[in-house]
Length: 204
Length: 202
Image (tube, rainbow over all chains, first blue to last red; front, side, top):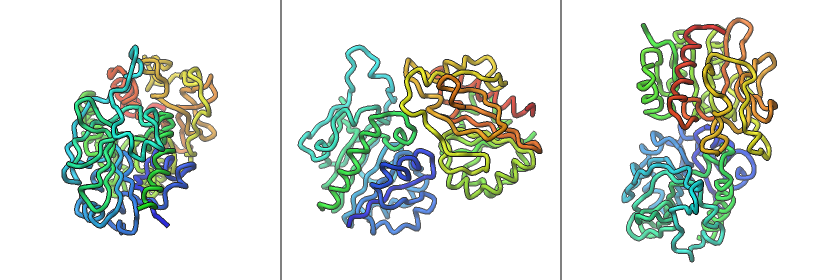
């Protein structure tokens, strides 16, 4: 039986997303950020670093995140966690967050899905992954880019080559918005992403 | 004169720019939220809590916060209550299936924090509603409701005065100083909050 853990900062949006239905049933354990250094990461098949998890608790564990990935774990990192400062090979590009793109005439989000044969697209449509994003990344060499910015950088990538494990990183912030009752697409994203993640770790 | 208002920061830079642009650094002591248990709250007139606060940690400081209120302290809370950390607090209730009109904000009672602010414009940016609030933290009996949504049904902002002098100011949404598209409104709200606290007028 797979075990999926998620970082939890005690914020209202982490609580609403991961401690209340429907998504509380899709994670197995909360990792309270101030106590993260006591957690035995290796026992989890997947760990989600939830959006806006405070980097002050993540960065000191840089060696342990690396060890977790090297030992075969699946690490998912959502937006605003400063991942570029605690994992190697990821370059972050700040972008002005455009909350209003869809108000423009003929609006089309600038982020496009790529590598459409990836299994995630069996669980999520482009629309489910579209609200806004908090910067982009140049991912490690060999990573599969799933959401691409016009300048070639990535809003979501899946890296299965850098480690024995798997690294999925995005600048989307679904738990903040679902937990804030403020973006239906974020809720749809979690409805698709979390079961997909479970399916992936159980298959592997 | 020492700063009289404690601002509990949830990130290293949270509030730094705000204090600078509103020229409030002399009035506000910006400290990391996880220092709370080691602080002597009696030296502060008020405590400001952000929407991003770790409410589990605040629960661990519940006795300290309750005592502070009991001795006449003032606490301003922003955000949705998920884990109540004071006896007056109840979990947030979102408006179910809201219409755009349900998000319209109404001023029920005047208050110095909102003086000169067009309250009905606070919850919209470029036609998108919900930036100020999407529901409410239910007020305790005896609270004065300041602003409502859903045609007066949902008490978004309220003030509660404990017998004995403590005061709880609640805003059930995004931090009051970040919601308006026009930053001058955000700064005005923050400054008027500090002024109201400083004057000690209930």
